[in-house]
Image (tube, rainbow, N blue to C red; front, side, top):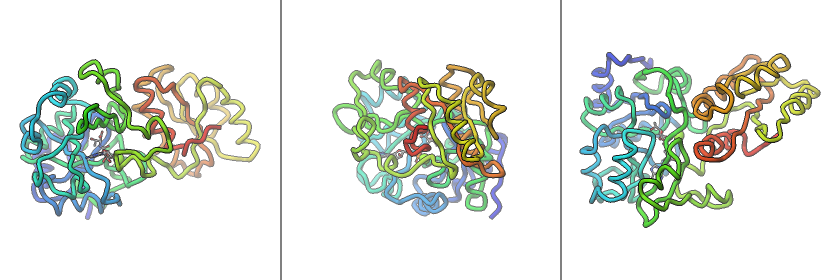
Length: 339
Ligand code: TXA
Ligand code: MG
């Protein structure tokens, strides 16, 4: 199978493929998703196969309107309705209790809940509307690789395994959605994202983090968070923003004749670019939103350098607000290693 590219003018063709049970990668503001008809069990199973994803890791159901979530949820009201009103369309996934039998076990991984999200990308909302069904969508990377923020990242990982890619340019957020579980009394953040705890608390009151985000030894409640993630092949180490030990790290690697890559903001790159073998800019200094947008693309770009780099050093940010999401992904890519 040759994977086709579709432009936003070809949504009809992409929607038709979804209706036929084919896989179509779709753009969102966070990362590209791997889409299939959520009501077609055979199509959903193909998603796991294409990604090489463990079958106990449930999929997010993407919707284009509130009407499309109502058939699955007993009573769409209270906190979920408030959060939907504030943050949808947008980068928030809500894990909600679902009506028994309303959604296939291949989507939920056999859980009594499912994750729902209305993406802030008009092309994809039109795709869902034209397909006439909700669309499941894990990030459209091979399992374990950094999530794709461009159509060409998707092509790199999944060419030949999926019918097509709907290309709407680079993702603007760049990190996956905040996942919040509303099935208990107190809302629980299972995965941090650009929508932060304090923003959510401003709408619905008290919110907690799932224990594993606080204590590394705890098992995450979200099945997906336990798997190895976001990891390039090249070794990645974090450079503590406070310590400012770029020079020391570069010298250390040079002494071992290592080929070095740097992922950092433009002002840091300006100081050290002549001393290293490759760089990727996170954007302007102190711009968290730009850093989030470029992190995965940077990890992918430096992972593919020829000749292969030996070490990539990446800038950290303080773990406040959206910085928590950035650091959550970076720590996984670096297997927790600081220089
Ligand atoms: O931004 C995003 O969320 C992207 C775009 C494409 O929408 N999608 C995405 O999907 O990141 P995925 O499958 O890579 O991550 C979904 C996460 C996983 O960690 C999964 O375990 C968790 O959400 N999840 C899904 N359904 C769940 C449920 N019922 N209970 C707990 N966690 C769930
Ligand atoms: Mg993913």
